Amino acid sequence: MVNLGDVFPNFSAKTTIGNIKFHDWLGDSWGILFSHPADFTPVCTTEIGKLLMLYPEFSRRNTKVIALSCDPVESHLKWSNDIKVYSGYSGDNFPVPIIADEKRELAAELAMIDPDEKDSKGIPLTARAVFIIDPNKKLRLSILYPATTGRNFDEILRVLDSLQLCDKHKVATPVDWKPGEDVMVQPTVSDEDVKTMFPVLTIVALPSGKGYIRKTPQP
Ligand code: BEZ
Image 1 (cartoon, helix red, strand yellow):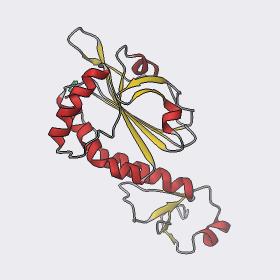
Image 2 (cartoon, protein in one colour):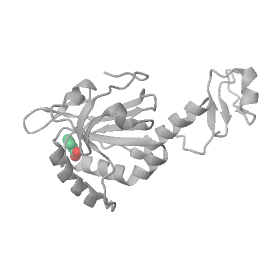
Image 3 (tube, protein in one colour):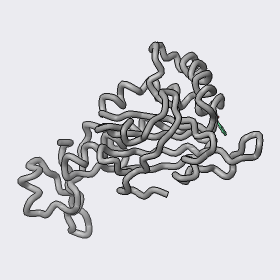
Image 4 (tube, protein in one colour):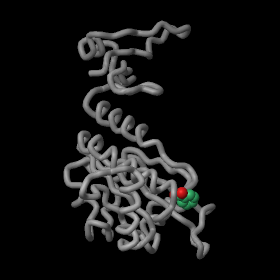
């Protein structure tokens, strides 16, 4: 089990781009690991197809994406053709590598088994985990979805934007925030410092009289 702030395991894996050591593959980038229950399954096909289409958006955010499924590399490569056709992806390459976690070793190490979903042999499948790892190799977000629910990758991009913004400036992003909208000053910024750090500031009046909601335009 990896907790937020922990260094993410530097695992070795067989993938569709050859053997990798995770930290070396990441280099100085942010990284997102998306796990999938199995190859040639409908929801997974829609998800990896969407990852292909969003690939330029992840690259623009200095972020490498990698998928994982518990079938062999040869199966992943065959499945990749289906994913390309299904999603309408027209690139020559397949920019999202897929890890072959045939023995469910990574699934077990990262606690992403879904006990309710089993393969034809009765072995539990991998759930839909999302791990966001920063350039210091620290885990910054983890979400676990059941096999039957496809994820919302626009939300993952939104979280990435929030994480990268809040690493640079002492701000936090409110509910349903979208890039370009106002943000909140972090509670750790003192009232003395706030006006010099954020000259355009709205302090929301509340019954408590505590001025803790301090809005400012996105830096
Ligand atoms: C799917 O990707 O469609 C799927 C995989 C395992 C269980 C349920 C759905």
